[in-house]
Structure formats: structure tokens, C-alpha cells
Image 1 (tube, rainbow, N blue to C red):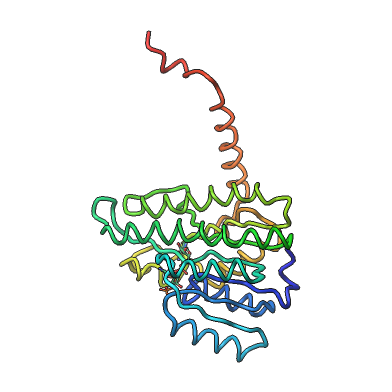
Image 2: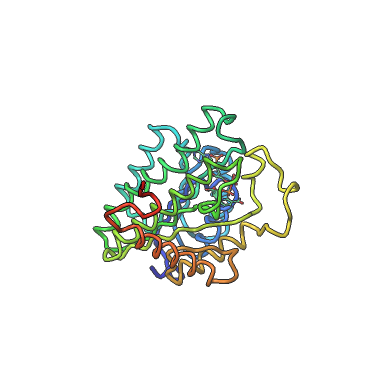
Length: 266
Ligand SMILES: NC(=O)c1ccc[n+]([C@@H]2O[C@H](COP(=O)([O-])OP(=O)(O)OC[C@H]3O[C@@H](n4cnc5c(N)ncnc54)[C@H](OP(=O)(O)O)[C@@H]3O)[C@@H](O)[C@H]2O)c1
């Protein structure tokens, strides 16, 4: 999808009220996209919409929605099913900082609902119209924690592994339909994410953080290049190539209809 010349196209961004999603809104408005901005904080969305509309001629619509809420997801699904949305940015996400046994039931349920269920529901709602129109792009915001779990990130890491695996499968499903699916895997990015999770960026090594502007600009460059998996913080591209090659080799090595010798009881 040629995003650089994208005037009169429309993007729907989840989690557009702050951080990475808000920068996507700014950058896509600058590229001429009309926008549908989704998040819970209506005041934040309105302020951003006013700013973007003053700066340019794009139309910006805001929809206050809690994507862990069934009725609210349904409202966004209707937009994706009934309007010509060219780019869906599945960005809304949360990551409570707590070990599995300690995390509240509410936080665990919300993390699964937002990071997994909402992303799947919105993707599924967007695809039929994109397939009919033979064009479209979906950006699924995962994390480098998709392949790394820490004691306090088990659930979050698992949801982001889901985002990566789901995206890689859907890429294959739609490859002949003119639809691009990009899995974006940010590493440390300076946003409200850490404060919301009960952490402080000051507690981390500042050298691992980039700004949300750097992250989104790199992500859009990757999308323009047609990348299926984009990791802006990875400087050595061979790291991903080697990892993905090892993954494919491992899968190939699983296709044997008998247990390995080490499991054969004498
Ligand atoms: N920052 C990082 O270091 C980092 C690293 C890797 C991946 N990521 C991923 O990047 C994405 C964006 O995060 P961010 O860093 O930009 O953090 P952020 O500033 O906290 O943004 C999160 C966004 O998600 C929205 N959101 C949260 N709960 C929601 C709900 N129930 N319904 C609808 N929207 C909801 C928030 O808006 P409301 O509160 O207004 O609803 C906000 O707009 C997430 O998927 C995160 O996992 C971030």
C-alpha cells in the first residue's frame, strides 16, 4: 500500500489518546489520511482532533470506546464493516506490571480482552471490506516481549506473542488480496504506558528508550517498504532473519510421526 501518497484514505487508530497511537494520528494526518480516533478518554481525543484539524484539512472523527467492553467493540466493528477504512492501526494495549498469581482478576481479564480479543475482533471486522476493495493495511502493535517473558510480564508477553503469531498467519491469508499486515514490535518507548502499569521510566536504563515519534516514523518507513515484521530498535537486521530462519527450521524438525529417541523408554 503506497502510504506516502494517501490523500482521501481513512485510518482508524485504536488507543489514539496518548503515546504511540497519538503520534500515528499526527503522522497519518500529515500524510493526508482522514482519521477515526478510538480510546476511552474522550477529552484527550477531542483535544488531539482539534489540533489536527487546525493544522490541516483532514477530517478527524473521535469515538470514545472501551475496547474491553462488548458493546463498545461492537460499535467499532460496525465502523470497520460499513465504512471504507483503508488502514487499521490496532495499537491500544496495556501491560500491568504484576506476576501471574498476584495480578488482580480485573487486570488479567482486561489485558486479555484488550491486547488479544479486541485486536482479533477489529482485524476480523476490517478484513471483509478490505478484501472486497482489494486494498488495505493493518498494523498490529505487538512488542519485542513477544519473544521474551520476564517474571512480571508473563501475561503481557504472551499477549504480544499472540499478536505476532496471529499477524504472521493473517499475512499469509490475505497475501493475494492486496492487503498488507504489519506486526510492529516496539521496544522501550517513552509513553504513559509505564506510569499506567505502575512503573516509572526513571527506573530503567534510559539508553533503551526511544521517543514515540522515532518509533512511529520508523514503523511507517517499514510499512512503506512492505515489511511484515518491523522492529525499529533492532539495528542488525540479521538478528531477525536468523531468528525467523531458526523458527522455520525448528518447525520443520517437528514434522516427524514418532517420538524422538530420547523419549523412548528402554
Ligand atoms: N511504550 C512502550 O515501551 C511499548 C513497548 C512495546 C509495545 N508497546 C505497545 O504500544 C501500544 C501503545 O502503547 P503506548 O506505549 O503508546 O502506551 P499509552 O500511552 O499508555 O497508550 C495506550 C493507549 O491505549 C488506550 N487504551 C488503554 N486501554 C484501553 C481500553 N480499554 N479501550 C480502548 N483504549 C484503551 C489508551 O487510551 P485510554 O486510556 O484513553 O483508553 C491509550 O490511548 C500498546 O499496545 C503497547 O503494548 C509499548
